[in-house]
Image 1 (tube, rainbow, N blue to C red):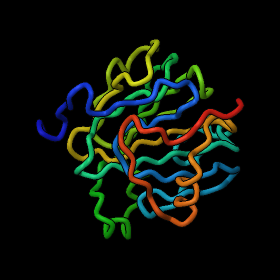
Image 2: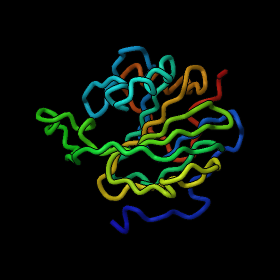
Image 3: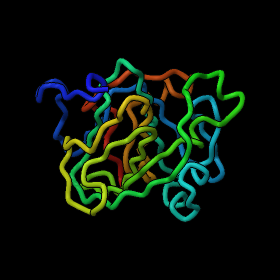
Image 4: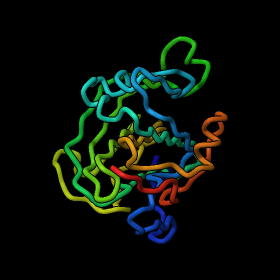
Length: 205
């Protein structure tokens, strides 16, 4: 676990400070989904509505018409994650669950993701509206108990051994994924990205 949560050197994951660049919070395989009313998206080979994911109907409505960025981490990825923009981060909400294996065979017996413990915060960002960032698994977040001002590229937390997913929700028109990522996602193909890599651009909020 010490190796799994290690920190890299400061310059190992550069990121863009250009206001219009939407950056990846982590190393991962990225898939993007449009968010529609009662629409479903696939996580760990299981379909979910946004309301089921958040357990909050009102909050889910705020993101209709927007985009869900799904970052799936593998064991060979760097397991620390950052804030994608400057802004004010809310207190953390925790949704209790049961940690299950990520072995695909287990999904035949239990919906893996929905049963995992997950946390999320809202970020009133400088360039992308109100973003929601959710983490799943064995999560260690910095200063999770209080709202505070944060900076793009600032470390938000890390996964201990067993954590595997980061989700970022963007409101309608606020963050537009790169065309290649949209195209691959429509084909069911993940895009390998690194922490800090530009994966989209600011839209009109």
